[in-house]
Image (tube, rainbow, N blue to C red):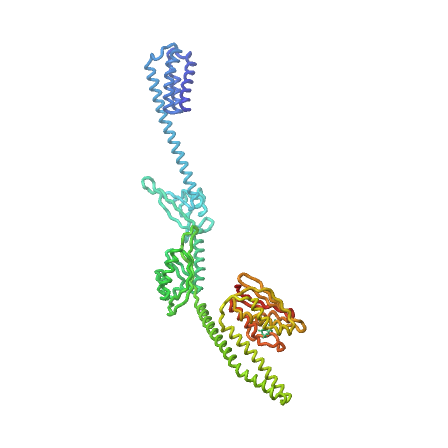
Length: 575
Ligand code: ADP
């Protein structure tokens, strides 16, 4: 738009100049002169179009303004008009061609400059060093990285033979200051459009980081392989399809197969035949679902023995969750298995010997009762019939015999009670523990009365047990509370309970002599006693109580302090 406006303006200016020159020129002299100039300027500035516009405007202005102004008639001299138009068209065309050529040259120069800038920046930004040479292998250009690697700037290197600038030894480039950098490099010829080699370009790749990374990976590999080899029977890796790609030498040596055999599912060939099918099916399923692998199985060793192994593994995934591989361990669990088997053997031996012991205790106590009863009866008869005839010492002996027999009777009765608890049926039924306590108290009524005991109890809950054994527990604890009372202090016994989730906890508390809490566990053992002969007993009462409570899924324990009374507690399931 501006170009065409300028074209019109040029024609008007030409008119003004022509009119101003009019007095100096002859009447019909050169009416177009200023317009030719204007057309040349207009076409030179704007090209063909504006040139033609100025020509057109000029023709009209000359014919309708200049000629009448000079006193001439318009369009009389048509030859002049045609010449003017032709000259102006030629000028405009020539200007157009010149402008186009100039524009093209400018564009070509710009694009070349841009291209040069672009390749310079690309070469500068590229992560590799680049050196270009001419056909005689003399350096022409180095990018910044190549300058750093060689220690040469472009002006220093330009024109020098390549081997003086780029010096290498054992895959390392040696810079001017002697520093070395590990590199990889390759050279490509540069060809012109006719295919002639006009130079070469050398691309140098700094591999320092890659070598460090490779070393780190090698180190990590060494570490985990060492761990794998150290741990019987090492580590294993499988590809995402479940095929073994690595197994520690310790495993391969154990089973006597090679890594290649192992990769072909060979590990299943050395599985115990009883476990092979299940293990392979489980492994395929594990690979399908991407879950963890956790299995025990036996591998046939080259020693001809089966080795129990705990195999554990898990899928290894990248940040996007894509499965990379499976990694796991084969742990030799022979010792654990042997210990487990030995423990099982011992437990069953122990259980058997316990059963035999209990059987023996039952039989012995039962069979001992008869001769003991006889000794008791005849001692009593002896004392009754001949007591006054016996000498003082013989009478004393007979009394000792009776006391011994009494003690033995109690011991045997307790042993029998213990055996009954151990052998008896442990049917679990709801029991009113309050009623069981009442029964126990009434069977202890005499000793409670004799000792002046003060017994307090509260309402007790229904529990799961059996009434008879529960009465026995209360009975034992109450008689102990009376037996182990402090001299000259009337026994005070309190029986309470509290509820805990699903259970009732009973507490039998006394104000007796107490005991050292270090023995709080010991006193539940068979024949375990803390006090001397002044307190008669067999050391079986608490053992019986604990066995009874445990038969119904409960527990029993004790708290005490010497001289400060004791609390015996037991827990039973609530009904
Ligand atoms: P024993 O027939 O000796 O009483 P137990 O098994 O009933 O046997 O008790 C084991 C030991 O625990 C007792 O010998 C005594 O030393 C201690 N003991 C039991 N109950 C009490 C108590 N209420 N106060 C202090 N000591 C006790």
